[in-house]
Length: 295
Ligand SMILES: NC(=O)c1ccc[n+]([C@@H]2O[C@H](COP(=O)([O-])OP(=O)(O)OC[C@H]3O[C@@H](n4cnc5c(N)ncnc54)[C@H](O)[C@@H]3O)[C@@H](O)[C@H]2O)c1
Image (tube, rainbow, N blue to C red; front, side, top):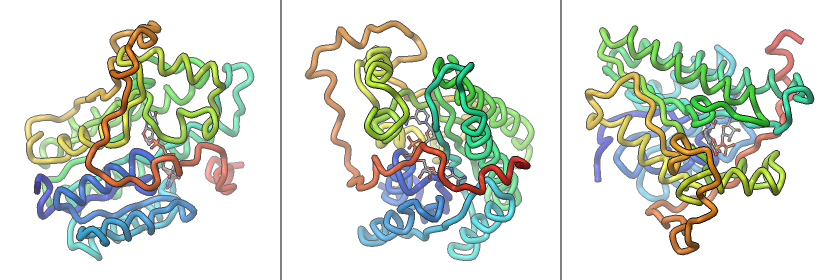
């Protein structure tokens, strides 16, 4: 399959979770991929795994919420592979699950930095190159950006920003041949949606999954398949869109998922070998986060 043959893509947050699946799916479809993430993310491992299976990839390590790092990331794509056709703004964080009255200010600022600054600086840095290739941007929105997110209200707000920001880019940049879209995942089987590795309690985890009409989490690969379509030339008339890959959660906030029989709750195996689907970090780490916000 060569749906991205000859294309060069950056995948932010490409070392873990959904990003690993996007990077590996794109590489399998013929793209050369810059796997970008924090220095402590397994971005080098993902790039090495892609190369070991015959694909083309390079790792980029840096905090992509900074203008300088975002520019350096774009330069890595152009310097290594000669051009940039696709930017996937997938990096993001989900550091707390608390009612607004108790919501830590530093968790709010951390999300503004990682969910919004990253998308702004990466998109801004990529545009000159995307103009040359008539390329496109696909960003990680969320069902939470559409419906709101009780117990993490600012997270839903950051994703609402991403939706509107990408639609603005779609309208503004169409005259240069650039498309801009969002994927809106529901609860996906990464570190974030498990009580052992994310901020949710056991009760929240149960409610989250039962709130999905399909009664299960989505897999990173099921989300990557939607990114693939939007990033490919098959989506040549699609811009300003938000494609939800959410098991139906945006059309039903009830607990209908509890009624789904167990055989229908099995996640599909997919074709990718994912080694880092649970390696994501949602907690506040990277202590320079506060400096960026002027503290
Ligand atoms: N997992 C879900 O249920 C879910 C649902 C809806 C939307 N999403 C969105 O999908 C995206 C990926 O989620 P995931 O569950 O795979 O998360 P994840 O934690 O597994 O992966 C995200 C990666 O982004 C990296 N990252 C964050 N900020 C960064 C920065 N400033 N610079 C460089 N790297 C940075 C993280 O270190 C991490 O490796 C996020 O944008 C998220 O909001 C996820």
